Length: 131
Image 1 (tube, rainbow, N blue to C red):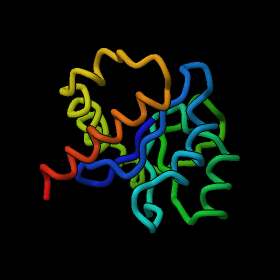
Image 2: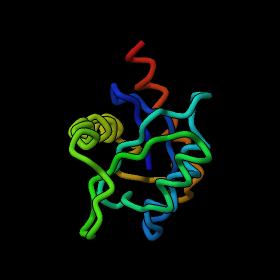
Image 3: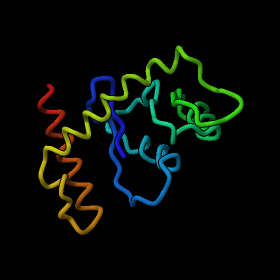
């Protein structure tokens, strides 16, 4: 899981197994960010549409969650805020940049800690390229 800024540069990266839901991983990933201040807004896909997650992020860290609604009767997002969701391609661009590193794209590392080190090294190289 990765969190990127408005330019697609990495702010936080976390490696876990594929089984947990993304809603449960957001807060821990935000705690492991590279910068001191939390982002103002967090844009996610439909998996992030959770009232409990939205409330926890707003109250504890002051982060506004923007995610399209899943099928529900009461809509919690309006159209103006969801226009920012169209910029989600910048996060996908970060994943494409990380896939350019062969060691990350094929995951030769057996242990998650070693793979996280390689992903963090890739993030450092991406950040150095954009200085």
